[in-house]
Length: 485
Image 1: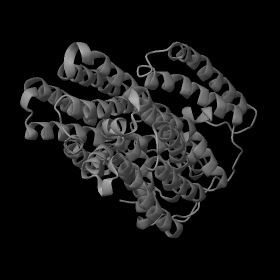
Image 2: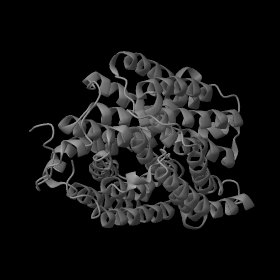
Image 3: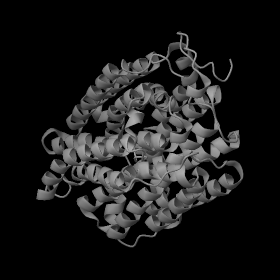
């Protein structure tokens, strides 16, 4: 199969060379270079979830309380989501390799600050800074892959990226539980942050030798009005949802959501005017006129909401309901990790043969996994069978592993190389905002039902709520392009 012969059972229409957006214009990314950028991508993804199983230990050590514990999670997620598109734009301007290196260095330093934090407020501040560093780092990965690969090599690279995204999310909780349980040199929960420092250092050294420099051929300045409005919109939506319950639903948690629709509408108006005036907006509205981008982001959002909520709820339920320790709670997700990764590797061949139907099949398999998991918790709560739990987790992982990598590939398939950074940033912002929304919505639903229904029933309700997001995915999938390039 040639590099451009990536298609489903239908014939890909011939396109004129000048309209093809997928040709690399920079030195090719070597296999070691790909491993290096994926290593950098794994760090911020792992860190969104690694703290979940460590929260009880952090609470005991720093006497943080529920509100500050929520801020340890939310501060990272909000800073990450708000600045991702800016990170993509800066990479287009000053060079993606350069931003990747800066992001790695900043992520290592802020992880060190988290690990050495003497009190809860210092930890919250360090987590916000860590989220900002992650926003510099992650968009450069997708943009570099987009600019330095094509055809089959790009399809494989994007599948590996999608596999890394999913496995890293689950691995974060496995690794977090392991590090807390082992208590390396008496560091306890601090090890979940300190472990990033040597990994970032290794990735930095490898990147200096293996990652080629790429940038947009027509770089432009950062769109300050668009950046401010996007930040206001995301903060007004995410902050009250993630922090409101823990803070006791104060007045600001009800007022901020009312700001969101106005900030979002103003952002759209400002971006459209900027593009019509010949300037380069933060998120060019023309990107959303690409069917692959528009429809792909529409499916990524509900998928990420369900996934983020699931990871949070399961971490809490296993520890508070089934009395698993941090290590056991993390190990319960190993079957999901393994199945997800295997499915993501099979994705390119399946997509080449079946196209978007892979997303439909993956969503249906994911639904079966959620139903199986709910059944296990409903019938075996007092003594959950390890094989039954592992089997349900594995089915769920297969479904998720077929869905997310394919969606990432679809979104990026028609992006011009010059917009790889901003397009990747917009996609990861959607994914990250969805994860945060999932923690806020499904997590809040679970925690609200906990006192009246108990852990078992509250968990089952949360799983069924996630099943509803998967059903929405199935409906939205039919808006995806039939041809997956």
